[in-house]
Image (cartoon, rainbow, N blue to C red; front, side, top):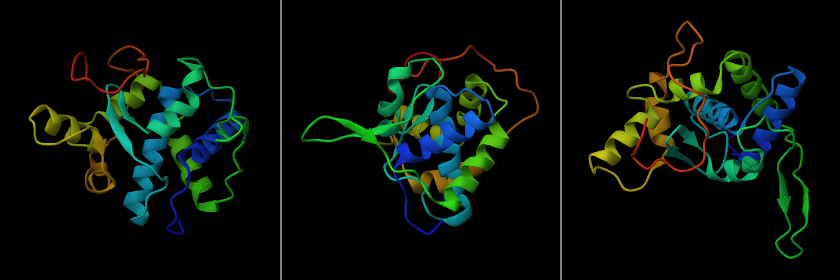
Amino acid sequence: MSGCAVDARMVCNLFLEQARELQKPVTNLALQKLLYFAHGLNLVETGEPLVSGYFEAWQYGPVHPGAYQAFKAAGAHPIDFLAGRRDPMSGTMSPLPHLNSTDALVRVRQVLLTYRTMTPGRLVEISHATDAPWHFVVTRAKSGGSLGMRIPDDVIRARFRYHKVSIGLIPAFGEPDEEAPYSGNGPG
């Protein structure tokens, strides 16, 4: 990448466009994990963030709050719209500009081709890998060693290597519905 992080919603739109071409429906839960994997991979390979903003440790894995808000209207259903932007003065919605970044397109396709056959539950399972960024932040928060549930880019860069894609696509648990930040209660 050229060193310039882009609006996460624009990368999400690119994921949705590419997934549509592959005839692969994508839910918000899956989109959050795909966005996180692309961002982490970019941090590891280039040292630069793919998207602006930050990720948080929610119950079902890393979530980019701005991107989540843009697509939460889809609920647990496949997303059939692209994110737009709201004019602060008039309140009207307009399309976001199309992301014309070859680097972002390459990263999105790389992640889609790797993870497209996996269920959202399997993506969550991968995002929860022991010692990986989500696990590290949640473990520190439970022990009182950190404030908040943000997953800083330096933690993603340092710990992304702990994500491993194992053979077998059967999720260890049901298909979760991403609705709220991690509370420390329930499965995690």
